[in-house]
Structure formats: C-alpha cells, structure tokens
Length: 314
Image (cartoon, rainbow, N blue to C red; front, side):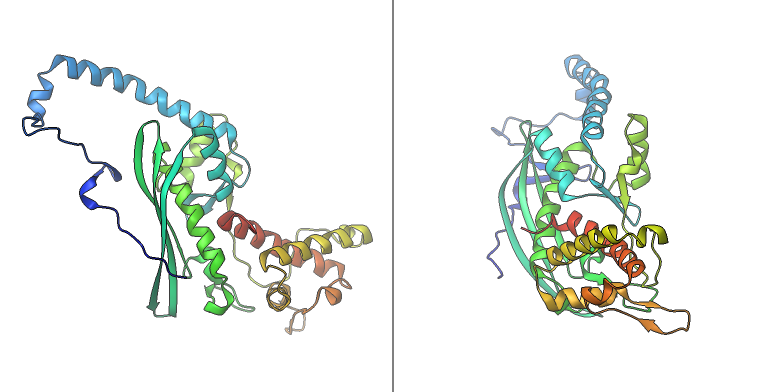
C-alpha cells in the first residue's frame, strides 16, 4: 500500500516564526535586502508597518469571531492540554474561510520501538488562502493514543494495541484529516494552541467554551450515568441497544468478530464478589438493562473519539 513520495524542495521554502512560507524570489542581482537601519529610515515603509500593526488585532479578532460563531460541539477536543481540531471542525472552517488544499501526497513509514512494530501514515500538501501558500502535514501512527491505545480489562492505564487490532484505513483517514486541520490552524494562527487559551478566546468572544470536548479512556469498571428508572423502561432499553449496535457496526465495518471483541472489552467489570464479568453478545446483554446503559455510555465516548479522528465510516 506504500506509494512513492516526492519531497518538497527545501530551497523553495523558508521558516518564519515557526511557519513554513514561500521563499521570496529575487528578480535580479541588484535586489539586495535592506538592513534594519535602512528600513527604519524609510518613512513610507514605517507608515505602512504602522497601518498594518493597527489592523492586525482587528483582523485576528474578526477571524476568531467567525471561528467561534460557526463552531459546533465537538469540533475541538482537548487532548492532554492541547486543543485538537476534529475532522468535522476542519471541514466546517475550510468552507467558511475558503482554504484550498493542492498537491496532496502520502507515504507510509514503518518503525519499530519498545512496544514492537508499528507504522505511521503521513500526508503532505500545499494549503492556499488569500494568495498565500503554506506546506502542511498531517500524520497519524499506530502509537497515537486516540486510535492506537486502549485499556485492557482490569488495567489502570492504557497500552498500545496489537497491530492486528488496528484498522489501517482508520490511521490513514486520521492522517488525511489532520492535514486539513493543520491548514486551518496555520492560517488562523492556532498551531499548538493550549486548550485553556482556546477556551479563553471562546469566552472573550461570546462563544461556548464547553464546546471543546475532552478525550477519556475507559477504566473497565461498571458505572453509568443513567438512572435505574431509565434502565427499567423497555422502550428506552431497546432504543439504547439499537444505538449501541449501530455504533459497533460502524466502527468495525460490520465485522462480527471485531464487534464481539470490542463488546467484551467495554462490558467487562468487577462485581461485588471481586469476579470479573463480561458479555460476548448483544443478545445476552439485552437481558440486563442497567448493563446495556453502562456499556452504551462507554461505547458512545469511544465512538465520538473515533469519529473525531477519522471522520467516520467512508
């Protein structure tokens, strides 16, 4: 599945304040860049910079205002203190800010670390916006926690999944969508922004900071937010089981064995006698309403994380 990959010509780009931007073209040998003192002595240049400085804050605020006004719940997720733009959010911003992506290429990078063999998919392209172009990159690997890690029943911490339990198409899709997210963040000045700072921006501009959702890993213990009264409603039980089934089918492309393994993982809990209990079929699970709601809550969180990274089933 590996494709040939062509590197960007490093002579054509330059790094400025952490961003890659086009290198200025020198038209002829007589064009020599001015020194700082020469620029300072140029009244026209100084006036131009003063006008620009007066407009930069207004421009940035206007762009952030648009961003805040079109953001929907879950467009951003908090991942270990850094705000990550989901695929749905990136697509929404791309439509409103008319950012284009051209020349996309992809390649696979196999690796081996202390956990064993793994791989990373990398997508690179050039993003265009208002006459400006920026090379952007999106990547995702089997070691990234959103898709490559999980908590095993009884474990307190997540650990890398075996490669056979990871869908390569999910890794590829995540890298692809990350490329679009990188383009949006580059042009809006949001690369590497901390979650708390983004929440401050939302608050300052009248947005809803709680639209930025957190990513959580399951502990395998039985809990749940539904009341016993809700769990005793036959119609609601049936509806919840139907939603649970639909999410498992979507995440695993209707592959029964993968669905079964996932169900066992998320339904596992330790009962009052200290015995670990799990369920390997939805039919069996349906006989225990409270268990249905608990398992549904776990799968719903995992499904939201999966969809945020991959964009959902193609």
